[in-house]
Image (tube, rainbow, N blue to C red; front, side, top):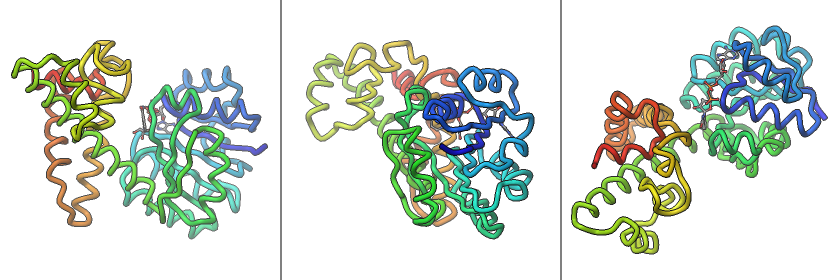
Length: 291
Ligand code: NAD
């Protein structure tokens, strides 16, 4: 069992740190929120008074923070100077590819090993320990990170070199955003053409229009397996987080000169949705735009 520092105990990190503690690791947890620290203590972690205290002597440091600027500040202000020599630094936050590569490079220059390891799966998967991790880094980094990630998830996949985990995550979510929009507009059109939603689902779900957005997360209430549509679009994957990931995808596309017309349109539609009624809704609630 290892000593692990866990920084960022929010919706996702709280459950992830708890699962590491459940597996018997010595988890030194830090967050800016006292409430998050109290929950971590109740879940078997040892709350630290600062990020510096949390990382002291830890063989692995896991970060689960909101965005790239939080990760970069934590690496610059804390990890690069205070992580134990040879520690493995694992950033599970969803952030831009450039920042992921920059912090990993800075860590390597200090004799540390760093990987980006964003996750697929939401809060329920974080709590249940069934996340999928996509890891960017060297073979050595992947080998060091894999056992810790396996204690929090059901799949750990080496995506490629540094930044490749973030690349896989935002490309995957760009597909998800675009297919959700396409699925929503198709159901709305089908309804206006006089088709019954269940009947259209029965046809499209076994035809070439099938996608995860349709058959695992159908945006129409009462159709397909249980999903946020059945709870008036509460819970699930919040629309602002989908918007964040689409913006990261567009940023990455611009940096390499890639054309992403569907991702671009999905971002525009999610921006409008989040500016309006979508701020507090699941991302499948964008079907309301087409009603
Ligand atoms: P969150 O806002 O609930 O949690 C972030 C936590 O980080 C907060 O508790 C905050 O207090 C803490 N924090 C911020 N700055 C800090 C600092 N400098 N030091 C210590 N703690 C600090 O966010 P979340 O939903 O847990 O998401 C975390 C990351 O996971 C994000 O990058 C998000 O995009 C990604 N993600 C989220 C989901 C989801 O469904 N929520 C799914 C997949 C990926």
